[in-house]
Picture 1 (cartoon, rainbow, N blue to C red):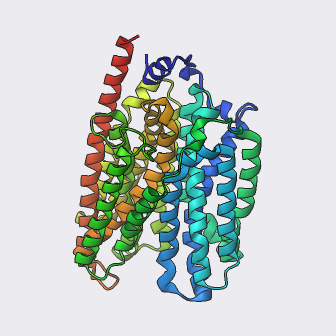
Picture 2: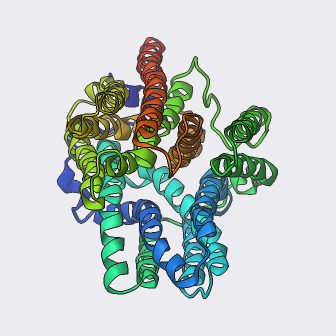
Picture 3: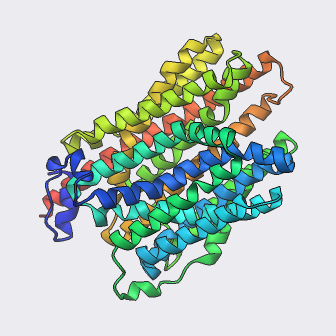
Length: 488
């Protein structure tokens, strides 16, 4: 008996056979609307980040204010994480339908503000609205998966959402660049408005209204959310510090604030995090470490790889961007293959292979820099993408399976939030590492080699920690499954 069946039987429910799930069912008449709704919600979040980052330089060219450019990304990211952290509480209090509709309206409001802006400060004013709305939408779309789909289709929909993330990494900059070049940066921003309108219409049709419940009176932990927001903001701005010691101090302060917030939340009556989050003796806790550490390690490539290809190996922007496309395509193909496996037990056993492939890919990038051989970059990127594709969907499902039933909303809503937080923390750690090794825009090629090598070595070490927690997660989950069988 697999992990999902044990958990379901403990809750006195009848398990549906997972082996019968087919990809075609997602697009069949019973589930196509739900599939489109959830994938569109995740796509709004995933594509928006790439759309805006590609179009913003053109806005800066029109308005000026290049020094404010990084704040457009920072504000969006901070408020997206805040929205994701608040999502489970908002869903419990107001219901998924109302929360999604209001969040989409908040997102559209921010988009309209940014699209019609006449200055960079006005663009910045719209970004928190976009981030907060999208953080809520992405988190609740994950939380709705077990509510809108039978158990046999959960692996497939998680695989579909993993593909959406990969497609965003590949297609987002391409589409936004095309729209910006042939229309305007405002058109690239405005694409989100009709997509959000379609999403709202689908939510009204698909997502059931909440029934009255005592859970609806659960208060929103605003103070803890503000503390988390302050910590993430400090992480994001640490890369802008004027010196490496100051950057290290800001980053250490930010991580301390987040650690204190987690400890406080564990003791709170109405917590943001599910019980057992980040505990090393529970499969949920160790699994969430994997969810955080894998994007944290991969941020090294997202931030520095394309720069290295252009300024160390003289690649053009398009050729350098091909490495990102390779990673995204590898992610998508692998996610489809793994989600197509009929055995849930086998998919779970493959979870540690994800961080192992990520470690292999990051080691390859470090060797490529050390050996000054760009050809190693491309198979390394394929390995990184395959690492996420082979583990991400199953890991997400496993986190919900090992959560107490009453806390599955918290767990599922936390997944995209942790992913964003991982990238933010990883970018800051990589920035600190590179700056300590002399990285700047005037650095020599030799200095760039040293800085990039240090970045990828640090990322590799982080990925080995993800591998350790991945192995431990599968072991703890198997042990929990055996205990469940013995108590039946």
